[in-house]
Structure formats: structure tokens, C-alpha cells
Image 1 (spheres, rainbow, N blue to C red):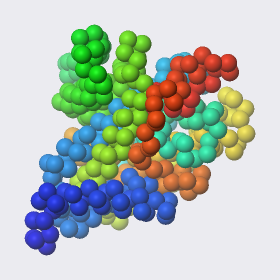
Image 2 (image 1 turned 90 degrees about the vertical axis):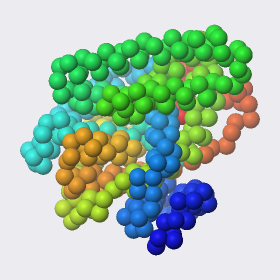
Image 3 (image 1 turned 135 degrees about the vertical axis):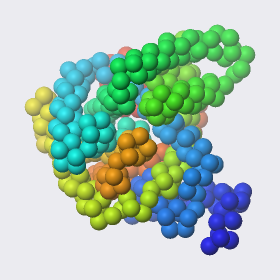
Image 4 (image 1 turned 90 degrees about the horizontal axis):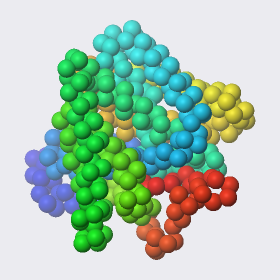
Length: 415
């Protein structure tokens, strides 16, 4: 065993790991197993079974790039025009989500005996759809364009609400800390557009095709800044994506379709390391009988409640047939990335019992499988797509919204 560990500490060992993470998950997709779930399981086997890569700094760095790319992609997909077009339905959906989160928080508070703040985080982990994961899976479910629009708008709006709640929950230790963190976040929101403008005026004209590197650098820096604030990497990376999307009029290539595609390709490479690292960070005690049972209970309660809420709301607000409402509700079931991130926060900052973390892990692994089996196709997380031949070959989302009919593409913006 020592010789195996010594081998995987070498450069060749990392090459083997890279090969395994890219080949094995895709080979098992024929069994309707999402590649994220397989990468996560490989991390568990490597760490708990073989004692490999637990706390490895190289894997941690690659995993950081993965989580930054995932939330940068989600931020770039925020289409304000789409949310504005569906403002009434989205607002009602968010109000319903707040009710569900309140109910979930009270259930966790009294059912598991946790304090208020970790109870809120557990409720978020149970009820927040993983937007980047969902958006990348939409084209594989055979949904109509209007159904994709509905899923996209609801998933993005829900994640934005969840990030806001996450921020205030983590910073609500005291009024002074909340004020300081809010001021730092507001300062970041004010400074980032200035940096984007400086880049567009002073650097981009003399450094062609440097937009991707600049955007990624900003995402990583902002992610580390929000990590220092105690709200993890995801808030900063998501914020950069949103602001870059808003800045597209000044520098169109910053949030163009090709840029989104580049981020998607980048994420397709690094996301498996995030899931592998998350699996390697687990402990044997996380999968006790109590933890597995709690995960099954979470699945049996949260998935039907969340899906039913979406179905009933759409039938009430839009008069949709049951089958169509289900096709919108089911893709929103997976909570994978958000749940994994919150599991880390719950363990590091709140020292919740291992069985709670294990229950959330079992829950999110189960709910990630639901869309593939219900809708007939496995969600493949950031499977590297083919590069477009040219920017002219891809339609401009803004032009599509302006075209007769007013329907925008379900992937307006970039991954």
C-alpha cells in the first residue's frame, strides 16, 4: 500500500488520476450514472479505501478551479431580460421557496436539534437546485424551448435567493460582522465594473483574445475574497459572472456565446476534480446507518415536496397540464453542487454531527439520479462540447429576443 501511495504522489500518478477521472465516469454513463456522481464515488474510494489524495494540495487547487468555473458559469447565465419577462411567475416561485425554506428550517431545527443558523443551511442544502449542473443538462432531456426557459429562470432565481440567504446566515454572528461583510461585498460590486471598464479600454485593444483569461482571473480573485469573508468561493465567482453579463454592451466578447462556451470547456476539465475532492474529504463515520437512513428520509420528504410545489404553482399560475409541469419540476430536483458546498461549510464552521453530513450526501446523490431515470437521459456534468466553427455560426441571444415571437434561447449567454 505504501508503494501505491508513493506512486500517486508522483507526476505519473497525477496523470493516471486525470485519465481515471475522464474515462471511468464517461464509461459508466451508459448505466445512467452522472459523471459527477462517479467522480465523487472515486474520491471516496481513493481516500477512505486506499488512503490516497486526502488533503492533497494539488487536487485541492484543481478542485478550486472547478467550483469557481461552475459558479462563474451559473453567473454568466443570469439573463435579466428573461427574469424580467417572467417576473410575475418567478416572484411567486421565490415566495413559495421562502415558505418551503422556512418550513424546512423549522423541521431541521426541531427534528435534528441543530441551532438556527446550521438549520437554515441544511434547509438550503435540501431545497436549492444546483443551477450550473441543471443548465448544462437541459439539452439532454428533450424539453421544449418554453420548458427550458421555465427551468432556467426558476433555477437561476432560486440560486440567487439562496446565495443571498447563505451570505446573511453566515455573517449574522453579530451586527458588526454583518455590516463589515456587507460593506466588503458592496465594495466588490462597485470595483469589479471599474476593472472590467479598465480592461476594455486599456488592455483588450492591445491584447487580443485575452478576455477569457481576464474573466477567469477576476472570478478566482473574487472567489478567494468571498472565501476570506466566510461565504466560500461560490459567491464571488457567481458575482463576477453576473457583472460580466451586465457589462456585455461595453465589451460584447466578455459574455458572448463563445465566452460562455470557453467557460463550459474549462469547467468540463476541472469540475471532476471538485467532485473527486469532495468525495475524498468524507470520513467513514459519515456513512453510518443513521446517516444513510437520514439521507433516505431527506430524499423521501424533500424531493416530493419540492417537485409538488413547482407543479402546483405552475398549474395554478399558468393552467399547465400535469405532464408539462412535471417536465419543469423534475430537472430542478438535483441539488448536487450546492449541497456539497454546504456540507463543507456545516462541517468546518458549525461542527454538525457526521450523520447529518452523511445524510445530506446520500440525499444529493439520490436526487441527482432522478432526472436521468424519470426523463430518460443521464445528466452529464459539463461534458466537453464541440467548439463552434465561428462566432457567426452561433445566434446572438439578444438578437433572438428581439426577433419576432420574442422567445429567447434557453442557453442565452454562456455556460
